[in-house]
Amino acid sequence: MSDLIADLRWRGLVHQTTDEKLGEWLAAGRRTLYAGFDPTAESMHIGHMLPLLGLRRFQKAGHRPIALVGGATGMIGDPSGKSEERNLLSPEVLASNVAGIERQMRGILDFESREYGAVLVNNLDWMRGYGYLDFLRDVGKNFPVNVMLAKDSVKARLERTDSGLSYTEFSYMLLQAYDFVHLNRQFGCELQIGGSDQWGNITAGIDLGRRMSSVQLYGMTCPLLTKSDGSKMGKTESGAIWLAPERTSPYAFYQFWINVDDADAGKCLRYFTELSHDELEALDQARSANAAARESQKTLAAEMTKLVHGEAGLATALRATEIFFGAEISSLSDGQLREIFADVPSRDLPRARLEEPGLNIADALVEAGLATSKGEARRTITQGGAYVNNRRVPAPETQLTSRDLASESVLVLRSGKRNYALLRFGAE
Image (spheres, rainbow, N blue to C red):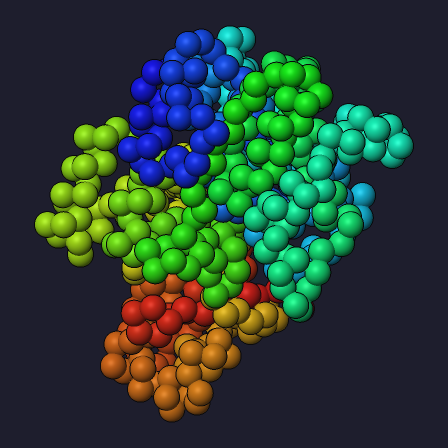
């Protein structure tokens, strides 16, 4: 316990704390802490991982984590770090999002331990029956408006000329602050952690706890996830990097970390993995000596994929990586191929096209969009650049039949080193 804050500081994971002696306070005994996650989607993305892994680190150090899913606060939307008001979600969508996030949390935190098992809560459970007038009398009277206006999250929005701040979003701070008070009363929770954009909400909860219950509460924030150039990390051309495999396949998740820039690799290893200081410093040295080997990125990708998707997900990602680098494709299902080649162009053709004498390979390349004409396709084949299921096509006269399928109904075509396309053969 005594080394936890020192380790977090060494990893760069402490942005702000409300008490310089937080480490000593933590070392004095087992504490209960929480972090909140609003269900704005049915899955978390890697931007949520720092506070979630923060809970995991505290739990492994002997403390008790509470993971809060904001079924109530999600109905409003946190204005912190946002330039415009969020769209309000329906109760049905929120309920679905809450269920999805809960499943992911159970894969990261230990909810079974008798001594310091994690607790999963939903703030809708205590807010749905709270009357508006009662809430104003109990909570609202303890919030000086001038203090709320001074919060950076509020000031930033009020200073913009192109968007304001509704009363609904302005009230968000009261709800999150009351979460802290409620969790303190019910579970003895004394510490809230979150991203640096949550500092205003965290300190509001600490102040509310002092006013309503005369208790001393604490707060700590981690830095936001940014690249070395200051831009936001976790976004790609195709969108956010999600934890749900239906949104971001294990292969795509693995590839995101493999492609992390050398300048960001050391930080990401410290932020996201549980490797020891010696292991991390050894990777730093290896990266300095031979960055092209990408040992840091390979380690990072393996650790993160295994954490989020398990050993099976990592195995799938590694197999997909081998396939993308030319390994022959065999003994895979349609579902596995769809996952591996989720971002690859595809086209549906009738199954009858594979009946004897079969589909000519040149026609197949044109159908898949890997050649603009049969002449171009034949040249690619003659030059040795055409592949079926990563096996080189020997001649332009090659005919493809159902025996050449990589799975139940999918044919994988490749032109050159990395230009893939799928042909899917249905019943019609």
